[in-house]
Length: 178
Image (cartoon, rainbow, N blue to C red; front, side, top):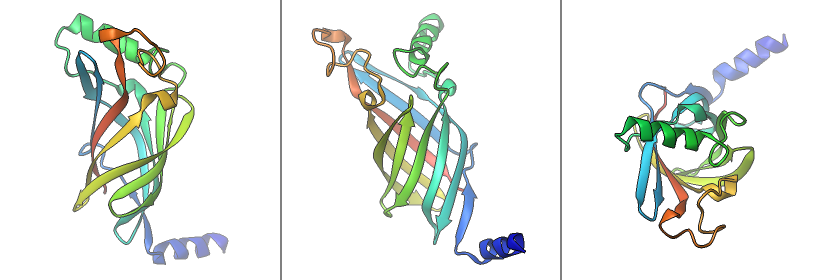
């Protein structure tokens, strides 16, 4: 009887569970340094959203940190070395933290509010977006040092000169909701 009541409540609720179309969704990261920048792609492992009146009410996106690619380095040997460095303990330590998560707690209509966890550290984020049909497009900017990623940061190490890496990381996204 409990199951029947639960099923009926879900059927008649104005809130619906929605998925993310992984094939139509894209995530592009960019990190900058004094002498330039690097960029690439990253993929979701899973995503579930709860919609209410055509807005995201809540949800959870899980990022596969081992899916990081680098697209700006054409020399394959250097690209492999750079990527290995991104995956080691200086940056994302994917052997210990293979995923990162974003728990969406609120949609203001112009921004998503959520809690992002990278390397076991969680911080509040605001993510401005635009919406066109079922496509959400926006940019998430975050301070990597708040997640324990201090390598090359001028905020923690002095005298880095042109080896300094900026703390802000940018993630541009296009998320298609099913």
